[in-house]
Every structure is written in C-alpha cells, then in structure tokens.
Image 1 (cartoon, rainbow, N blue to C red):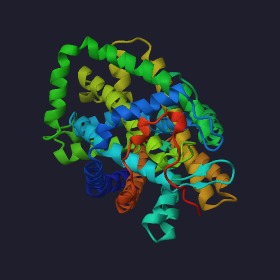
Image 2 (tube, rainbow, N blue to C red):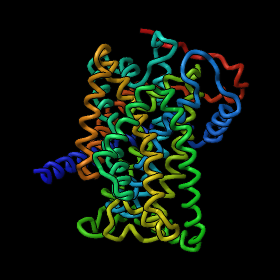
Image 3 (cartoon, rainbow, N blue to C red):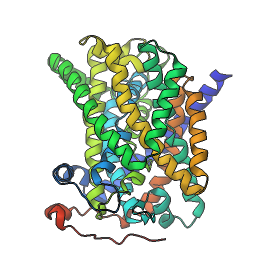
Image 4 (cartoon, rainbow, N blue to C red):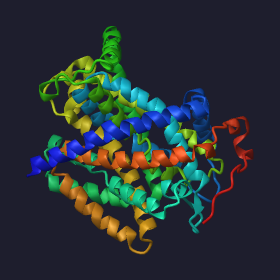
Length: 454
C-alpha cells in the first residue's frame, strides 16, 4: 500500500514538472530577462555592493525587520539540505547534465525571484504593530480579480511551510550517525523548530545569520580542497556536464538511459527547489524589511541565487562527479558524505553537523512563512492549528522514505510556481528594474514607491 502511494506521488511530481513547472519557469524567466535586459547578470555587482553596504551600516529604522535579518532568514530557506542532497539526487536520476540545467534555472530564476520579492514589497501593507505583511497573497490580488486565489496560495504555502523532506533527512542523519533513538531526535528537533518559527522573521534571521556563515565556510572550504586536489580532472568533469545536458544519461539501475527531458526536468525542478524560485516564500520574508525601496531589497535575492547555486550546489555536484560516487548504488542522502569521506576523516560526524546547520535554518524559514499564511487565513486560531498540523506531519513523514517527502514538497512547489508565475506575468509591467538607488548614499535614500494599503 505504501509502495503504491509512493509511486503515485512520484508520478504526479514527474507529470506536474515535466509539462507545467519546467515550461513556466523557463518562459517567465526568458520574458523577464528580455524585459529587464538581463538585470540578473548586469546588476550582480550592484547586488553584492548592496549586501556589503548593509554589512557596513545596519538599517536601524523602527518599522520593519532590519534588511540583513530578512536576507539571512531568506537565504537560510534557500541554502538547505537540497543543496547537499537534492541536487545530487537529480544527478543520480538525470545524469551529470542535470547540473547544467540547474545553472540555467538559476539564471532564469534569479529574475523571477527578484520580481516576486519586488511585487511583495510594492503591495505590502502595515501589520498595525510596527511592521509589514507582504507576499503573493497580497500582490496576487492585483493580478486576479478572484479573492480565492490568495487563499489558495496561502494553503499551498502552509503545506510547503512544513519542510518534511529536510526534517526527515536531518533527523535520520543524526540518529543514524550518532546511534541515537530516532523518536528522541525527532522530538527535540521539533521543539527547536517551533521555538525558532514562533519568533517570526527576526528570530529566524538571527539564527540563520549565525548558522549559514559557519556552513558556507566549512563546507565550501572542504569542497574546494577536494576540487583543487583533483584540478587536472575538472575540465573532463565540466565537459561531461555540458555534453550529457543534451544527451541525457543517469547512474545505474532503473534510471540508466535517462532522456534529455528527464535530465532537464530533474535539473530544473531541483534548481527551483534549492533556490526557492517562484514559490513566494522569499516575497513573504523580504516584505517585512525596514527598507523602503523595493528594488534595493529585491536585489539581494540575485546575490542569494548566486551563492545558493553557483557556489554551494555546484560544489556538491562536482564533488560527487569527481569522486565517481554518483555511479555507485548509494542512497542520495549519502553521496556527498561518501565523497568527502575519501579525503576527510570523521565525516559521519561532520555531515550530520552540516545537515543540521542548513536544515534547521531552512525548516525555520519555511515554518515561519507557514505560520504567517495560517494567520492570514484564520487570524484567531490559525497559528494554533498550524502548530498542531506541523507536529503531526513532521513526525509522520520522518518515518517515510526521504524520496517520498521530497516529491510531496516538489508537488506543492510546482503548484505554487505555476500560480505565482502567472501572477508575475500579469503584473510584469508593474515591476521596476531600475537600480539607480545604488548611486545614492544608504542614509539618504527615500521611499520611491507608495506602500499599498488595504
């Protein structure tokens, strides 16, 4: 019965992404790239400078969350287990060429994500408590004359907000590698998630700003050591990535002989998942910022995508390709651990630590957004119901195969992507790609767009 249910879920995921999700992100990305004159590429230096300016001088306005807290809360949701496990699973199924399509998704998705954050800020509203509420449930009101669309997007974000895949991977990794009771690990981790999510974007941002830099320095540092040690093999690996992107082949077993459609589909869907492209959660988080210029805050997601895909995801995939473990019958959750284990001792301790750092940050960010959406749907009892739902679902799926949990997340993400993509397309003329704010001192910038009111 469980096997049949798993096969059914996988079939829905494959059909949804192959025929709807993949075309949606590529077409919208192309349209916005032309409209913005490839702003995601041209303005990457500006995005990095904006991030650096926030590091040098924190925004101390009373209203809203400091921009760096929003940034780290959002990137905490992007830099997660998907960067270590999900992208490697895509290579197992779709072959090395999946990495090429992950890169393509990042280029197209960066401008899509910029647009959804921009619209979230443009149409955000005051929450009456010194902060802001924004996100797709607000800007979709402007795109569709159907109030139920905002309700539907909130329901899907509530489902997506309980990150069953990453929760399952982290708890199983900790319990297995440290020989601990899985029930105890699930219970303790669940309490930590509730503590973080209940504190809102500010608390999630505080936690992510402490965890993510540690992960990036340690993980990327170890990965670079392996890459430098095998630098003579890198040209061949990148050649294989490019060639198999248009021929398609996978690792072993039932997936051998993967087609180009499967390679592209796997790369794009995992790229969307790791970068949270078109999901809408980034729009909810960044809309709480104290920054009053939408272009300024939205530019940070271009830097987010660059870090997420071209730094961390690429490191993970090249590791498993260089060491050849992607061709071995190893569970996707163990590929990177096996790769690094050939060069570093005690990886059975390091990997659970890495997964905890990124998994906890991601689960917190999603859970925080889910709580806000539940409160939007039911202001009085939404949070309580969501706590109950989250506890039940996280416990149940922690005992399922991780691939099933990943498929459930991919289905919810695919539906969110399609609805948000249509809304962004309809509002594309309302999006500004003007980065002139970068020419002004941070302290002298004034609000350029009127905040929508309800």
